[in-house]
Image (cartoon, rainbow, N blue to C red):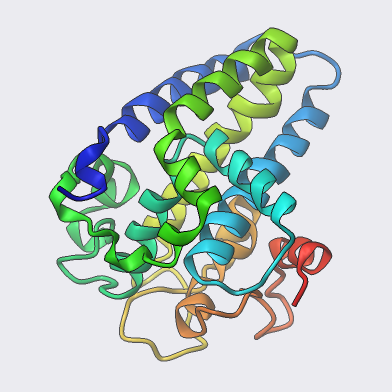
Length: 258
């Protein structure tokens, strides 16, 4: 029995994504406190940038930089708050299948299977036996990552309950709304960055990944997707052209040790 078969594989999605969507929509229309925008910006930086773009994507999936352990642990917690699955689950999908098999029949979220499949429905079609942890052997030796994988659901719900108990507004605007934005940011990344008519290439890669300028205001440096597929271990997704800014890389320069 594989590691994935020992956990409820669907739990990261049903346990995190649907409540985030519902509560995220509610938070947008609820009465906003005066500091809502500050909490949202801080939450976005922590959850979307430090958690997903930097920790899950560049640090764990591609090993593009090193950072002190306490920063890694904080970033893992931020990523878990996004509700997008455990670190091993996320990296298996991204490193093991999306990059190795980009835009083929075995790419779990390629728009070749349809826009809405790429945007969201792929999450509910994955079966435990479809994903193999052999693509994350290095992470299975990292006790912080393994802990977050095994106790992902507990960390997710306990963190949300505690933060909501401290301040319902800080929780709604500092966690739920940024996680809502982060979900749709990565949904745009998996779908629109692989549409063959929506951007340009700096690297002649075999996949359909593109740099999409108009996505920058929505997903920041993740918009330079062709750059990433062309040079996956580079922690700077931008920089090939003067307009390719990558704010996540600016944060990485503050926390990296190599």
